[in-house]
Amino acid sequence: MSKLQISKRLDGVSDSATLRLNAAVQAMKAQGIDVTNLTAGEPDFNVPDSCKEAMMEAVRTNKSKYTPVGGIPDLRMLVAEKTNQQQPALQKLLGKAPWAPANVLVACGAKQSVFNAILATVSPGAGEQVLIPSPYWLSYPEIVKLAGGVPKIVECTFEEKFKLTPSKLRRALDAGSGKYRAIIFNSPSNPTGSMYSREEFQELGRVLAEHSEAKGMWIISDEIYDSITLSKTPFCSFLEAAPQLWERTITINGLSKSAAMTGWRIGWSVAPKMASDAMSTLQGQSTSGINAPTQWAGVAALKLSPSVFAENAQIYKKRAELALEILKNAGKIKVLAPEGAFYLFVGIESYLREGEDSIQFAERLLNDAKVAVVPGTPFGEPRYLRLSFATDEKTLREGCERITRFLNSPKQSSQ
Image (cartoon, rainbow, N blue to C red; front, side, top):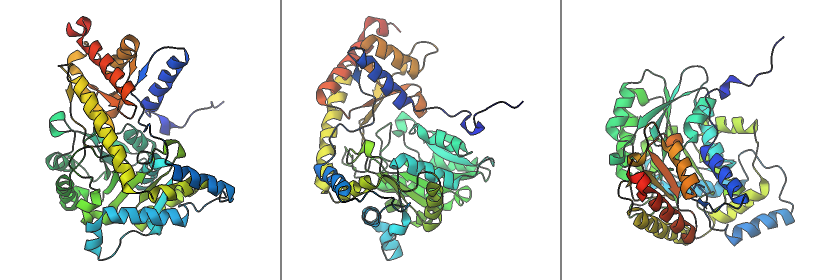
């Protein structure tokens, strides 16, 4: 008699460490334990009022029926316009605006867009590989595994500002055997806060255009943190730097981070018709079109003045400076000033006990100092912690001070 079983596609696939940790913190708080939470990758700003009103108006006027799989026309048009504005070099190359609503697929957040992109480009059971620079957003390798592909991790170091270099990309491609199907970029980065400049993307694009092993590779550019830049370096979309690769690039974005619409679940992909049609077929058999009133809120969000996002970015910048100022008192950590997003990626190798990685260290930090952070292990870097400064200054200050006291305690100093 045969036994019930779970699909083997889930073998080796982990659940989300960030969501799991955040749930544990909420459970501790429910018990009355004083925990400072620096885990969640979620803006603490409220959703803009115009977006709330647009959603309520959609409900009042019965704009809540099924929508096309790809999204309502108004939203897809605005997404295409936004992407065209961020990629003027591509428009110059082609002599026209490259992206139209037909190239846009609205999805349940940028995560589903990444999921769609990988499942649409990686064939199962063939050993096809996806290059992923490390540290990486923790879901990338897991989604590749679910697609039946093989994640190929390229380690990027602190000294390289956690960014893939052209030489490392070439070496990875030299070691290929015709199995590479995609590469994933995330700029600004979760978890490191690093951001590729135009020049850096240009050099990487040149390698991907010229290397024989890269000829059949898709480029997936996750740009969800595009509006949160913290340094003098401006955000650069991958295709603005490497427009020659437009026929095999899928740009991912959304409103979770820029407009604080995390729970509203609205993201999108912009891609050549071949890829967009494939992803639309995939989504049509899974979720279909996303929540209709949310899409009308998205229309309102994309009509907001850029100054709204710039003001939020300035607040994040001040928070990053505050956190860095406090943490510098813990002398043995390694941390880069973030260029974008709202994370600090803190190296704690000098504080690790023998045989310990960041997961066990984060557990000690939670139990002893009552501050929650995300271990770097699921992001591909077991010697680091991710701290989110997407929280109010009081909470951020308290959390960083607790971390500093914990690291400077005699018990830690003796390690």
